[in-house]
Length: 598
Image 1 (cartoon, rainbow, N blue to C red):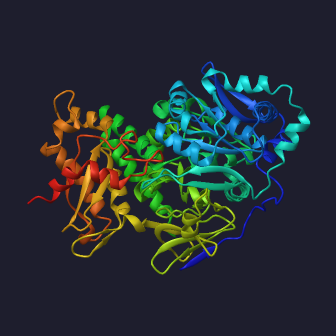
Image 2: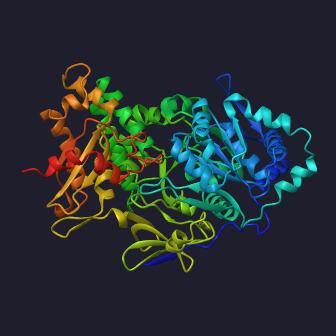
C-alpha cells in the first residue's frame, strides 16, 4: 500500500488556544486532581481549580514584567510540576514557549535564545543560570532571567498581584489556533538545531485525536500518567497536553535514577517512555533473577510470555497447555514485573526508537501492553501509533486520525495533517525543503501494510552503502543488538567498506553482574575485559541475534567493544538519545579502522 489515512476523531477549535483546556477543566471538573507534585517527599494532588489559579498567578507576573503577546519565553528545567505550570502560564500571557534541554551547553543556550529572540528565560538551577549568564552579552533581546530553585514562581506571583483578572483573561484568549504555541529546537544530529514552530492547532489535532483513539487509557478521575521524559522534548509535551486535555492526573519526575521507586509510589495507570526504559526494566528483572539463582525460571517465563503473545495473534489463540503455563508464571513472575511498573497499569506508549518485536511480545505476554508509535518534532510527536484494541507488534501503528501517510517512490515516508509544524523558525530554505505541496518529507524509510500499519526501516541519510554497492539500513540491526542486556549502544559502520562492522558499548550495570557471574576480577571494566574471550562470545550472541534480522550482505562481520560510553556530554547522542553518527565516527575513527585491518 502506498497511502493510508483515517478520519479525524477530534475537531480543532478555529478560534481557541491551549489555555482553553485549563479553564474548561476548572469549570467542568473543579475538584478533580489533574496534577500531583511531591511535597516533602509525598505525592500531593492539585485540583483543576488550584492548577488554573497557580497558572494565572504566574502569568500575571510575566505580564507585569512586560512580556507581550507573541513574545518568546524560554524554559530550561528538568521535568517537574513547575515546568507544566510555567508552560501554561507563558501561553496564558499570550506568549510562546521555547523549551531548552536542561543538559544544553552554554553555546547551545546562546543559539536557541538568540535565534528565537527570547525576551525572558526561566531556568531551574544555579548551573542553568550560570550558562545563561556566560552568554548574556550576546543576547541583547533577553531582559529577564528567573530561577525556579530560587523562588521564580513566588516572585512572579508577587510581582503580578496588581495585574487585573480582566487583563489575564484577555491575554489568555489572544492567541488563536494558527498562532505559534512553542518553538521546539530539534536535537540536531547534524548541524545547528532548527526551531520547529508548533501551533496551538498542532497540539489540538495531535492530542485531541490521540486521546479520542485511546480513550480507555484517558479516563478522567480514574487514570494517571507519570512523566519522566524530558519536558523539553516534544514527546514529553504530548504527555503534558494530552493529560490536561483528557483530563487525567499527571505527575512529573525530574530524575529517572529512582524510577522504579517513583512508579511504585505514584502507581500510574499509563506509562509513556522510550524503548531504553522498557529494556532496562526487563534486563534489571532478569539480572535480579539470575542473582537470586532463578535465572532459568525467568527465562522460561519470558519465553512463555512471548509465545503467549504471539499466539494471541493467531486464529486459534493460545493452546490449553500454553494458557496453563502462562497462568502459573503470572503468579510467580509476571505479577511481580507489573508491580515494578506501579501495579495499576495495563498499557504503555513507546516512541523515540523501535522497541523490537521480541520485547513487544514479552510485555503484552505479561499483561502490560506497550503500544509502539512514531513521530518527530515536526509532527508534534506521534504521527502514527498502535491502537489499544488493534495492536500490530513490529509496526508503529496506523496514522494519527485526521492525517495521511504516503510512501514515496524511493520509500520515504511523507505526511499530511493539521498536526504538522508550520515551518522552521526564520529558516525559509529548510522549510521549503521539508514541506513540499503540503507534504512533510520525514527522511525516514518505511512501508505500509494492507491495513495501513506503518513500519519504519531506516533513515535516508543514514543508509550505508558498502564497497560492494549494498544498501544497509543501520536501525534494523542496531535495535536488535541493543536488546541484549550487556549492550548499551551499538553503531553500525561500513560506508564504502568491504563489509558491515559495528561499534559496541557495554551497559556498566549489567557488565558488573556478568563479570561477577563469570568469575572476573572485582571492579572489571569494559576496558579491562574488551578482549576477554567469554565477553566477546557473549556480545557475539547479540550480534548473531541482530544478524538474524537482515540478509548476509547486511550482517555485521566484525565488531569492536569500546572502553568508553556514547554520552550526551561528549556530543555522541542527542538529549532524545539519537546517535550523532558523524561525531561518533570521528571520535572513534581509530576503532573503526581496527575493524577493517587485515
